[in-house]
Image (cartoon, rainbow, N blue to C red; front, side, top):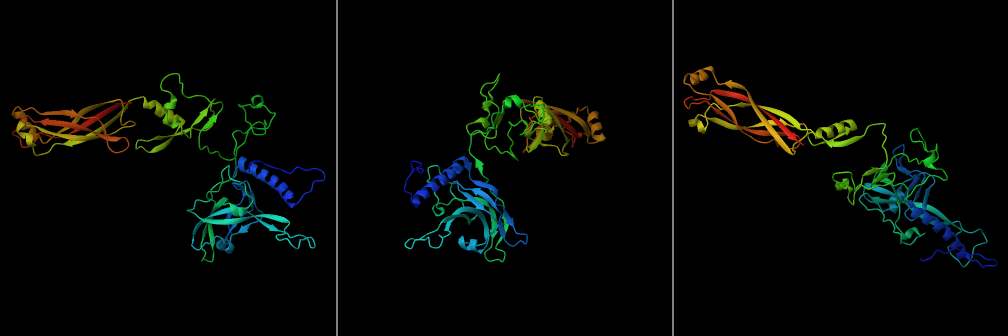
Length: 429
């Protein structure tokens, strides 16, 4: 079709049946084109799948839908799914099926007695616009929406367009064939537009008082949307503006979420007034996301500019038997001191401070023997490693290498039995 034609009347014009068909076709197709290209196909009202109160059968409630070809589909009274739907859709196996509603039409109402033609068939005076129910396995892809260049059709047998109402479980061999109705994947009708404008000639800039409570009717310049809003892409409120220039530092557009395929960002060209709280998702010490209110989130941001300081303590026991270096009179070893940081596991720099405390002797006899012989007891930290995270979260450890030197190779045991090591870890962000 390259043009849109409508009947042009003049006095004395000879009209036949196809002329009146063309007159109807013009108005029907123009209305459907408006439905098709201005609206998104889907349910306009009703059409819920309802389990019967006696749990026997499933019904489609009355309602209206517009399919992807702009055709209106009416259901005027509850329609109960039954054997004819199982037979018509050739269902032989039990399972879950999608329930689709399709536009249909049938010719009906023959001419009055004495006004039919003897040599002409298919003499009906009305088109009855009805619907048909299509049941598809849940794993199917449904119907392919027509493209803009596809021809409009008034013959349901030439297309496979429908509106999905939900899902239902079917067992053709059971006494209750239809059960378990759900409203899954119902698509409601929408609108295809770039602008929504409130009625003229009202001027929102003159009559809208932002500081006081307003409603869509007072003043009559606001827009009410009920009940929820889902923005799959980005949200811009007020005049748009660039994010590429900043007073100083790195441009905000360096954030990867602002790329060509970005979605879920919001830009507000004005103030944000919130009566409740604002929450942000941030990881806790174990790396799991947690919701923080605005006050707690700002506090964490401030803390991120401060060093993270934590400590850990480990009790170290010196072996009774001397090590291989006993000939030099030295016991030594490396111990992991556990430390759990508060916020940071890495940073620009870190510092580890180690102290020794709570030294215990093996026995008073051992000490007296060493002192009598003029020996010196030595305990020192030989080497301290950096904080090493272990697994996920803030937990980790510090490797501390220590050395105990009784001062004599003669004793069979070290004079020091055990001691405590405390590590202080300071990590700068």
